[in-house]
Amino acid sequence: SQTIHQWPATLVQPVGSPLSLECTVEGTSNPNLYWYRQAAGRGLQLLFYSIGIDQISSEVPQNLSASRPQDRQFILSSKKLLLSDSGFYLCAWRWGGTGGNTIYFGEGSWLTVV
Amino acid sequence: GEDVEQSLFLSVREGDSSVINCTYTDSSSTYLYWYKQEPGAGLQLLTYIFSNMDMKQDQRLTVLLNKKDKHLSLRIADTQTGDSAIYFCAESSASGTYKYIFGTGTRLKVLA
Image (cartoon, rainbow over all chains, first blue to last red):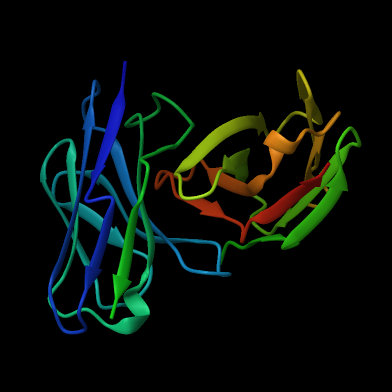
């Protein structure tokens, strides 16, 4: 079976500090990977998606970047956090290519920038 | 661009039916989904419907799709307190990018 792990679950970071959120998927190969952010009262915003290693698309201009160093690993980073980066970050995956149509989510990471 | 809209809140009494509505703009949407999010957790897939279907029923859940009006609804029969959560509508298209666009979520509160 397939599982998705996301960490850390919770973190509090000062403004201007760096960020690294990690996500790994097990039990599949060449998945499509996604980072979403859920800010209070603003729903779920797609930040990045990746259909393969070094194939990452950014949906909104922002203070964040994403990398996919391995097939099943997706990392969300920032060099200098802003207060507005606070939110609930969700990693997700789906079967690559035409293998499936459903997206599955990790448990999320709460980020508070202070 | 693609957009998905939902009302923010819905309150119902235990045992009543809940109907959560969603509208979307992308006419090339292939699949439409309903996800449930419990407090502090990730999203859990409830059900989905293919765009060539009008209705799908799964136990207490009924999904209705009006493709002409780009309107999707989720009906929960015999709503229970455990159904209290945020419900997200989402759409995807088989355009090759496999992007999933989510609505703002509807917070369902079930009153005992």
